[in-house]
Image (cartoon, rainbow, N blue to C red; front, side):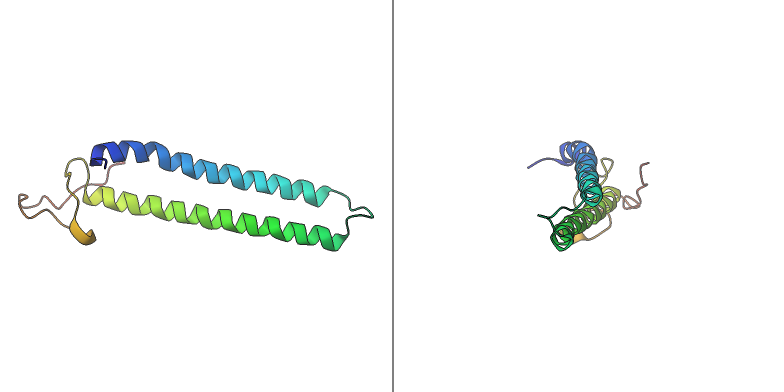
Length: 115
């Protein structure tokens, strides 16, 4: 298990990398869709067959968009956690409860958001 500082440092790099990977995949699928749409149909490939293939690409894009939304929500939740347990207050609230640890001085539960 990682301590707070190690996890924060790793996640600081990994989350943007994951977000970029999803965006890159979305661009790749969009390029494939664009090329597929611009490809002329021939006797062997009917418009119906092309349409069916494009529907699969659309499902792929929807999945990537869903994944992008999930990683962005995850990122936001981690920001909320960082406010509760910042490096200045390195403790982890039990069961997601907010507030200072029991032995903390009065006012220790007031933390600022780091930019």
